[in-house]
Structures are given as structure tokens and as C-alpha cells.
Length: 230
Image (cartoon, rainbow, N blue to C red; front, side, top):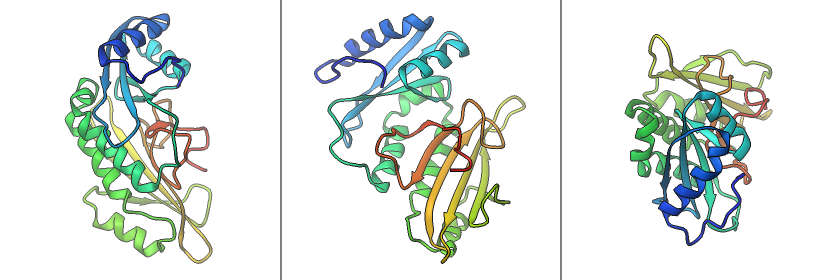
């Protein structure tokens, strides 16, 4: 996680103080908040606001954080992971983080944006490996997200869908779902991205959810270079 100290046994106030000290090396720390209400998992989440976007980007890079709204978000593990998180676990954690840590998200992200993130996660957590193309398309059709089908970027066996939220003259959030199928049209890979760019890329791209999930990732995490074409 990039911040090396023993999280277990520390109070939220102690954690806030330690994280503020560490992140001050990268600029002016405006706010640190700890969410320790995620009782279903063995970690806490730290939200960090910096004085400038450049300082925030440095924190994200140097401490291995991801970004949500105008905050860097760090996972603070209480103990080593004992097992690979399952698909349902990842979706539950994402929704719980948005719901349970809602007061903290509200410091950095609008209520409309939080609602949209939760809606997309809840919708696509219904997808499972091995489902038919028709079943996945049924999940998309049954949602109220207004997703539109897109032309596949590189693979003939890939279906892509796009949606958006919170559009203003100066900003917006875009969601992109890609679903890959095998020769018999059954789901083998899916990934839900959120970005400030309509093409799903950019520096503020996040992977909200993917199937199969990755054991070494905390969702959401910053998009890798191949996020659109895994």
C-alpha cells in the first residue's frame, strides 16, 4: 500500500495523524478521513485530499492509492489476506464502501455520483463466468442505466456497453463495460470502467469491478494500460 506501519490497534485519530505526516512529503494535506466501518473485510479505507491536483496525483503514485472524486483512497490492511476474494465479495465490498463510507465519500464525491457508482456495481455484480451472451445482455437490458451498445474495439467476441452520469458543461463520469465470450458464447471475462473521458481512458480511469477478480487488487483501482483491451 506504500505506507508502512502497523494498522492493527491504531485508532482512527492515530491513523489520520500518521497518514498526514507521510503525505505531507508530497504537498499540503487538506484532509484525511478514515472509514473503519467495513466490518465484512479486514481492512480500513483512508481518504486523503491534497491542496492541488498535482499533489494528489503524486500521492496516488507514491503510496499506491487509487482516486475517487477529488480524493486519494488507500486500503489499510489489518492482517494479510487469507483467501482470494470472490466475485460476490468484490461487489459487496464496493457497494458497502460507497454506502457505509457515504459520509466520507460525501466530502469528495456528489450524492448523484455515489448513487450511480452503486447502481452500476449492483447491476454488473449479477454477471457470472459461464453465463451466456443472452443472459448478460438481459442483465444490461433489465437495468435502468440507459446503457448503449458499442462496436467492439479489437475482438470480435467482445461486447461493449457505455453509459454516463453527472454530466455538466465542464465534467462528467463515463462508464464502460466490456464482456468477452468464448467460442460457444459464454462469458469468460468482464470489466467495468469509470472515467472522466468518454473513451474510457485518461488519468482518472478506475476499474470498479471485473470477472474474474484479481486477488492482489483493491477495488476500485487505477486502470492499467490495457484496461480497454485486456
